[in-house]
Length: 100
Image (tube, rainbow, N blue to C red):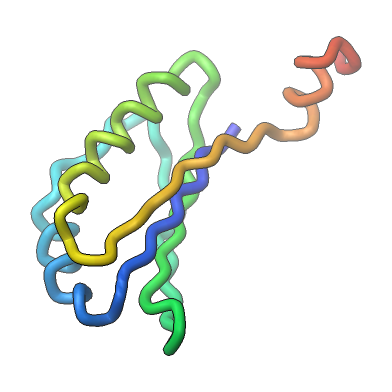
C-alpha cells in the first residue's frame, strides 16, 4: 500500500517551507518515498505530492511519523496537507474476502 501526501502553500511562503524542508529530520526507513513532485499554479500556489510505499504492519507508525513531520510546517502561512492511504487492488479485494 502507499500513502500519498499532498501539500499546498502560497508562493509567498516558499522560502520558509524550503528552509524547513532542508532542516527536517529524516522519516523512518520503512517509508520508501517517491518524490516529492512539485507543481506551481498562479491560482493555487505551490503544490507538492510525495508517494510513500508502506508495508501494512507499519501503516499506523508511518501515518504518525508523517503527521509529526508535517507538524514542523503548521505555522507557515497558508500551509495545508493531507495523507491518504491507497491499497493495491489485490489487498483491497482480500479486505472484502474476494482475493487470494
